Image 1 (cartoon, rainbow, N blue to C red):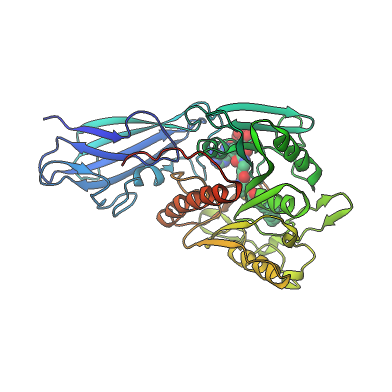
Image 2 (image 1 turned 180 degrees about the horizontal axis):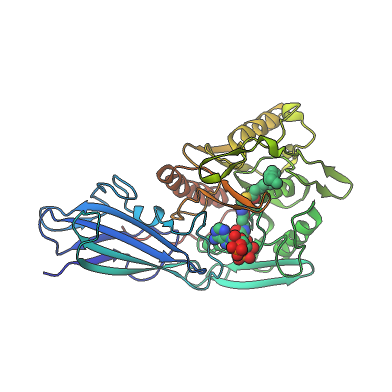
Amino acid sequence: MAASVSVEPAGPCCWDEPVRIAVRGLAPEQPVTLRASLRDEKGALFRAHARYCADAGGQLDLARAPALGGSFAGLEPMGLLWALQPDRPFWRLTKRDVQTPLAVELEVLDGHAPEPGQLLARALLERRFLPPGVRRQPVRAGRVRATLFLPPGSGPFPGVIDIYGVGGGLVEYRASLLAGHGFATMALAFYGFEDLPKEYGDIHLDYFEEALCYMIEHPQVKGPSVGLLGISLGADICLSMASFLKNISATVSINGSGFSGNRTIRYQQTSIPPLGHDLRRSKVAFSGLLDIVDIQNDVVGWCENPSMIPVERAQGPLLFIVGQDDHNWRSELYAQIISERLQARGKDSPQVMSYPGTGHYIEPPYFPVCLASLHKLPNKPVLWGGEPRAHSHAQVDAWKQILAFFGKHLGGAQKRLPPKL
Ligand SMILES: CCCCCCCCCCCCCC(=O)SCCNC(=O)CCNC(=O)[C@H](O)C(C)(C)COP(=O)(O)OP(=O)(O)OC[C@H]1O[C@@H](n2cnc3c(N)ncnc32)[C@H](O)[C@@H]1OP(=O)(O)O
């Protein structure tokens, strides 16, 4: 019998959904190598491989069989996706056009030799970023440059604003995936897109207030308040919005700092001066990579430092997703300072999910960890941190936590049915 690969659920799947991969028709105990590859929209090739042995019946189920080595080892049913690494140095897997899927090619090769053996079977996984029925609406309203993703159904839906960080542009893939879980999600650009400022400058919260008003007034967004989700600088913008603006009922910070970083945050008469940094504290790591984890200035005055965002003013609960191996800055320490600030002011401690072996770039599930890539501020490749297996597991858990947190505090999201595995 010829070998064949089966993937469940069959057909196209969302990028954040797990799949069950199995191979049938092998010889009993046959050694095989599984290879995965994908090409991103810029032509960069990402690859992973793992060695396995079929069972006594000539079957191989990645949910039951441990990988014996390769890009990863052990029982990792989704390892061939999260372990994908780019051939191009310091390249990050990202998705620019969410309307097209990424295709992951799976190949089953005979044997474990370093050189590939005979090709036994092949399959193509179509991984979508625009979940079925999600509507994508470009937003050009006043100064706001964004895309709103509306879940399938009639609504209104609980709303979330999603903000990325340094690098700018309009990053849509996390917002589009979140909409697949029942949240009307706005991917919000704030620089480096169309007529927005070309460079990252002071953070003017009135721009973000305009985006918030757009969401609250939208007939498909359930009022009276929305949630916020941000990573890195985007997380600090979310924390600032929650501290100064009304109608925000839940805020998630992924590896934010809780400080005004190296630009001033401004709202009406208030300004928060930057903590600042000293590039002389950066280290050169392997391959000439910069390690900037310690370049932020020391937090003099601890939780009373004037560069801190006054998070105690936030109306709704806060969730901090923290990578303990974050090399952009010390997210774990900053989450502790924020907790102490809240407690010192008689507020509840925030929920902190702190993940070992996890770096700065915590993305939705199954994105391969980006260990290093161009940082637009020093304009050099920097180390982001993370150990691939731990980081990948953290991404899966963090996504569940984020969905549960928004589900609880924004209420009423329609659950997408989990695939039957
Ligand atoms: C000063 C020292 C630091 C101070 C720090 C302390 C203060 C801390 C302050 C706060 C710290 C907070 C820290 C944080 O917030 S860091 C973390 C958060 N990061 C983000 O949120 C990123 C969001 N934005 C993006 O990723 C971009 O918009 C993307 C990449 C999607 C498009 O972006 P854009 O449309 O602009 O791209 P381009 O096509 O014109 O290419 C431009 C260049 O970009 C490079 N590139 C492109 N794609 C990739 C890729 N896939 N892999 C690797 N590199 C990639 C490439 O070299 C290319 O140049 P070239 O090869 O074409 O010549």
